[in-house]
Length: 249
Ligand code: 5RP
Image (cartoon, rainbow, N blue to C red):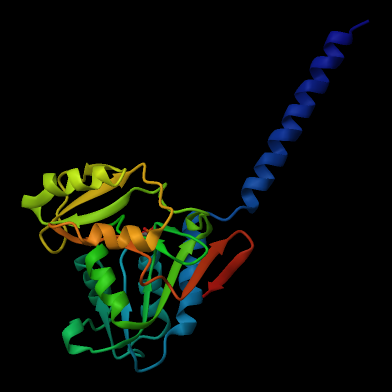
């Protein structure tokens, strides 16, 4: 008879079922931006009325800034910003931005990350704001890190580690970073808000983040490294398909 036809009808039917199922599953998955947004929303709980808070840089923090401006306009006294981009966004939305020197100790710092391990040690600086981010994190009682779930990793280093360097020392620092086992790549045509260059270290096996942070900090010409091991996050809020997860140390 016509077994071939039956087989091809069955195959067509099966493959459209598979397609339908894939479509339904995809439909139920949250968009990465939505995951960032729910993490940012959850961070609002940590904002105390009347406080001065630190605000980081990046697409996740942009959600936080927008939500902060909508939910509690004028409710915080002011913010200290880690970049010109975040300052501009906050000021446009009516959030008062002040200098860290005029703020003193901050209650919280809210910022994103490029990677976090389970000890909440971070790689940051994908947006190039690592030095100001490190300064504000150091000046804050609590560091609330917000991200989508893809940022949580078992071992740091897949994301190239950013290092801010004084421009004239770029090659000198590169050679020293190669000796540490990395492959530094100059982020060309990029100047930080502090007027410096950035080297992104690829192919690093980060086994001891505390030690590596010390080693890189000791290289002459380094302004700062985007490894947040000595000052990890205190709380990591991750947006996922299942909602928000909070990790604390
Ligand atoms: C900027 C940063 C950011 O926090 C980091 O790059 C994460 O950014 P995003 O929220 O866009 O993923 O360190 O210097």
